[in-house]
Amino acid sequence: MVLDDLGTSLRSSLDKLQGKTRLDEDDVEEIVKEIQRSLLSADVDVSLVMELSSSIESRALEEEPPGGTTARDHVLKIVYEEMVALVGDSTELPLENQTILLAGLQGSGKTTSAAKMAWWFSKKGLRPAVIQTDTFRPGAYDQAKQMCERAEVDFYGDPDGDDPVEIAREGLEATADADVHIVDTAGRHALEDDLIAEIEEIEGVVDPDRSLLVLDAAIGQGAKEQAKQFESSIGIEGVVITKLDGTAKGGGALTAVNETGSSIAFLGTGETVQDIERFEPSGFISRLLGM
Amino acid sequence: IIEEEDLEDPLWDLEMALLESDVEMSVAERILETVRETMLGESRKQVETTGELVEAALHDALLDVIAVGQFDFEERIAEAEKPVTIVFTGVNGVGKTTTIAKLSEWLAERGYSSVLANGDTYRAGANEQIGEHADRLDRQLISHDQGGDPAAVIYDGIEYAQANDIDVVLGDTAGRLHTSDDLMAQLEKIDRVVDPDMTLFVDEAVAGQDAVNRAKEFNEAAAIDGAVLTKADADSSGGAAISIAYVTGKPILFLGTGQGYDDITRFDPEALVDSLLGKE
Ligand SMILES: Nc1nc2c(ncn2[C@@H]2O[C@H](COP(=O)(O)OP(=O)(O)OP(=O)(O)O)[C@@H](O)[C@H]2O)c(=O)[nH]1
Ligand SMILES: Nc1nc2c(ncn2[C@@H]2O[C@H](COP(=O)(O)OP(=O)(O)OP(=O)(O)O)[C@@H](O)[C@H]2O)c(=O)[nH]1
Ligand SMILES: [K+]
Ligand SMILES: [Mg+2]
Ligand SMILES: [Mg+2]
Image (tube, rainbow over all chains, first blue to last red; front, side, top):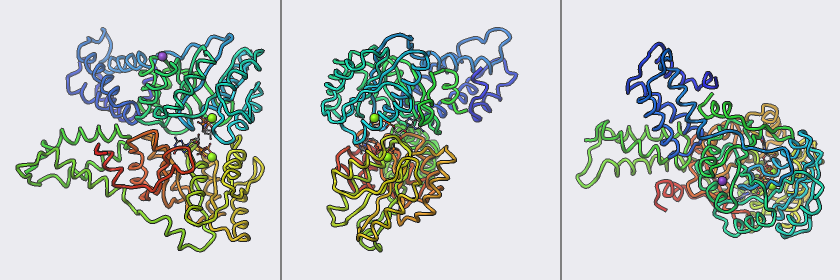
């Protein structure tokens, strides 16, 4: 099971339970403290950590371990269940025609992820196209175009255009032959009202089957505010976590999933178009708890 | 007299507050440890609560960390032999290239000419991105084709500046994660070959706990002289500044506050501490 490679400090506090069949309050308190530490250093939202750890604590104290289960295994199971309940399964992505809208903070990895996802769908036998609506960032058109060449997928953009909504509309028409439309957008954050209004307009025209929030694995406590804003303006059906090839734990994604009532769709693990994986809960949970 | 147990609750509250502001956990704990040590055995006046005293001590401890090594960037440029070469480092997407464009304008407003040298010979669209900034600002850009040697590009930038009496060379580098041994070795090589007058580490105000790891690794690969914290407009807390200053012992020099060329301001340590302690 995933929790076999729990963080060393967490594991050593669990090891103390070895052989015990009953937990006293001190045991539970110590373990809960370690879990809090792990989640907080993984950038999970502070109030969410407190909620999670209090439900782990009360379950650990109240529930009888089933016969033959050691106290240690019992706690492990509770921790795992609580985490799984929160993070859920990978966002469902049927292999059929669909439109996906990408949104997120400046520099979070949207353009790179658009090309990666297109590559991923093409490997599944579908024909994807990326539509670049970012008219703001210098070089955005060239970047997306070159990434799509590397992914060997269709691309639409307008280097001279200045209206993202218009480009989105034209792009969907121009790539009508494609099965999967992935619409990239310029970076923006929760406090930029004009840009939030702009993405609402883009969303209106694109009418996506799902909107995905692209989050840098290293984002801190701000993840909550960002996720809340994107959820209320365009509705978020899934989260893409990027830059997981670094040391950041990606706890902001847990916060975002909690805020948006969604799930995690993809993980980005590098700068090339192949560096993409579908989300898988157990590996992510063990990373959060500090492997 | 303040005893151990009087401190427990206020220190816990402050630790949570620091974590909510994205100060890295071990950094927060070490700062609170100095607060604990200064407080223990202190006597308290009747008018003060332990909480108030602890907060005052934390204010001083944070300011100690964040005010480390502050220097006048403009003065440093003014006094240095020209051209002054500045290389910008940092992980992917934090705002290095945009910061270079902003600083080029910041320097121009103060009477210094600059040339941009694109040491990012890797990322898709990197030449086009910095090229468009150079066009808009009417600056010279030195660039090579994708796949070229980053150190060579910046070196060409220095030669161009020497030949054309340009004051400052702004050398960009490709974003890289500190976990990539190859790319970190390449950064060391750039640092060795170019031997810049200043290396500025760029990170973003929205960064969380990982800010400590990367600041440390980048500082080890190519010793930094200071840092720039971008995207401060997206986040009001910015505890990452504390983490970076603490692990590198180097000052935060500028804040990026938006995507426009004017959106850069001198970093003010006091203002950051006040905002961390909720006194905006
Ligand atoms: N190492 C690593 N780098 C990544 C990953 N995803 C994206 N990047 C890099 O992160 C940087 C930013 O990526 P972009 O795709 O330009 O991000 P964006 O969200 O489109 O940025 P804006 O359009 O400016 O908002 C680039 O240097 C990418 O190569 C990843 O999973 N791992
Ligand atoms: N809101 C805001 N956005 C910023 C700021 N600085 C940079 N950006 C945006 O962040 C995104 C990434 O900026 P870049 O300058 O390309 O970052 P970089 O570090 O050069 O990225 P790579 O070269 O891919 O590693 C762009 O969309 C910028 O416009 C800032 O201070 N505030
Ligand atoms: K939702
Ligand atoms: Mg982009
Ligand atoms: Mg760049």
